[in-house]
Length: 371
Image (tube, one colour):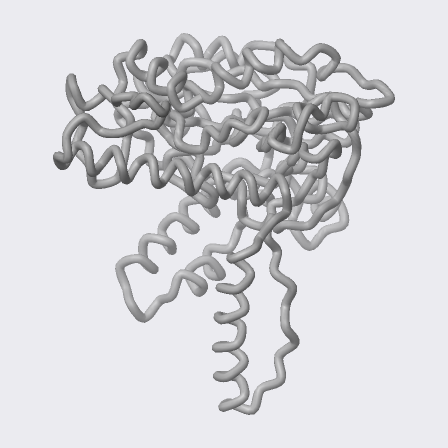
């Protein structure tokens, strides 16, 4: 998979991104295979050291995917216990009795977006857009002949068989076959819409670029017969979401299309983004009606682009939230927590058309996409 990712990047003419590292040219792509089949660097240079660092980082991704798939946290637990003991010692000094929390290993595993308020200058060239249905974000792990769905906060909400690799006893070839997906679950359609892939059939792709992951995911989905249909061994459909270019012409077509689901919003991905859990500015989120105002495009008048009554208020809340986050970053006396509270309008509630304290608004908030 790592080799496939490199070949993809070379064909695309792109360069793998790494924080604080310059692009490599020519021979830096060359990795030598020894007689034993092991990968080693051609020369012990700075480039060779970087290659070693990248392979070590990849090993971390491999181990992380394996832990999620096998629910095996040996070694990690000892580190957590040491931290917990240190906290307990501090609490004893303060004479505070705090109940010990169970570790939530599956929490904060999804890559989350930020509002695309500051439009990147390379949006048309280096970004793609995915149209998202209304639903709940879910971490889906298919392993050991079973499939589990977790909320973004780490709670297992369902366990069932599926035709995902490793997802049921009938297609389980060995324990190394497992898959980890970022999905949106739509309860009305009993469907998991696959947004992104972190691991497929035991091959982690955390460190591959978004455009490769999307291409690879759609090709793999097509190979799995029956994955998009409900059956006894696949009680929920798994459907891939298509991505589109971010040119003006493409976005106008996207907003004019009909979809087999109720649209919640648009996710914008930078093509070279690796899959990193947590919020990132390299993934942006907009409601469809915001496209003309935020991106400055003239779009066709459709149901998607029609502005709701709460549009002005929602945009104002977004701007305030962004402003408070910047203030928190620039002023030491204002913490991030305080800024989030002052501009508090979490993303899963930003799609809510009713006031949050009304019964209608609460019902709507539950049904809207957790992003």
